[in-house]
Length: 179
Image (cartoon, rainbow, N blue to C red; front, side, top):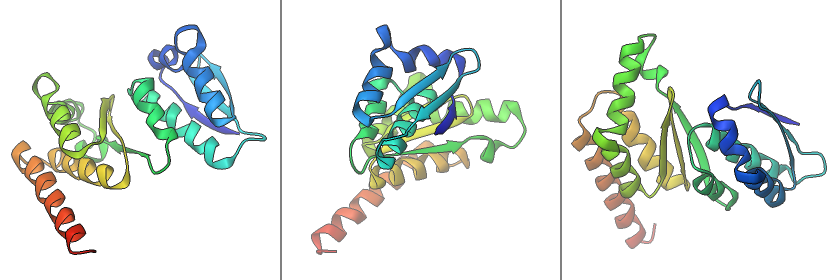
């Protein structure tokens, strides 16, 4: 049994229209989801299921809980795709105003910063509550999480974007060299 807490306002998304999302998670992974919509407690009954698939189900539920659409969260069912969650409080301390400001830096005006990081890194990025969640392969997660961390540490947006570009060039160069 695996347990995860899902915010009340995300329970409906987790269940989906006519239970479609819940059903798909169960069918794809072989687990049973037991959802308590009052407390937000989700129990993943993994008895008889492949442990790897049970962990994938857990990550899909966590991703939906962190603001991703089910379609984006289902990418976690693929091999080599992972979820990383960055806690804004680690950068903002106890100050509520600072947390709100930092969250705004990651999202950007009209969502432009988040979208730019997604486009440049190839990862999916979701800002929900005091967390930034990232879905992608290890390289995409590395690029996106480092850019997000730079923004949370106070770097200019252009610096974070340049970091992604520079790192991608380095990796392409290493590939060309046969490394």
